[in-house]
Amino acid sequence: MSSSIKLKNANGKTVSITNSNANQTDKEVIYLNTVDELANASGSINAVAIVSDLSRGGTFEWSETGTANGGTVFAGATGYWNRQYSDKSTLSLDWFGVLYNKTDEYSKVLNAINAA
Image (cartoon, rainbow, N blue to C red):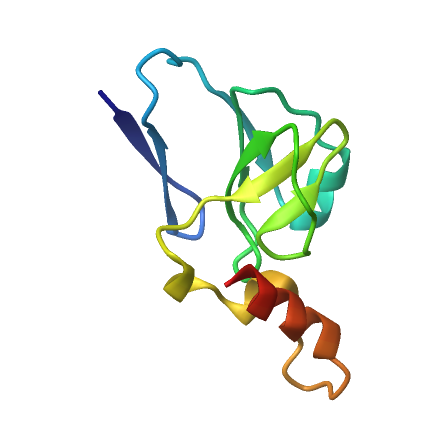
C-alpha cells in the first residue's frame, strides 16, 4: 500500500511525495532553497528534501550510497540525495546547472547524458 501527499510552495509549484513502502510510514521532510544546501543536509533512511529553486529544485530522497552528478544525485553531509522523477525522459539540463549563454558547459551536459 502506498500513500502520497502534495505540497504547493509559495511560487505555486506542486511537489508530490509518495511512500510506496507500507512498512515505512514516517518521513522526515527538510525544506531547502537551493540544491547547494543539500551538501550540508544530514539525512536518514526516512528523509526527503524539498528544494524550492525553480530551475534546479525538486524532491530528493536520502540514500547511504550514490554517485554525485550535480543534477539527479547530490552528495550530502551523511549520504546522498537522489532526485525523485517519474522517468528518464523528464531529465532537464536545468537540473545540472547548464547555463545556456555559456559555451563551456560540456561536463554538465555529459553528466545529464550519463544520468539518462
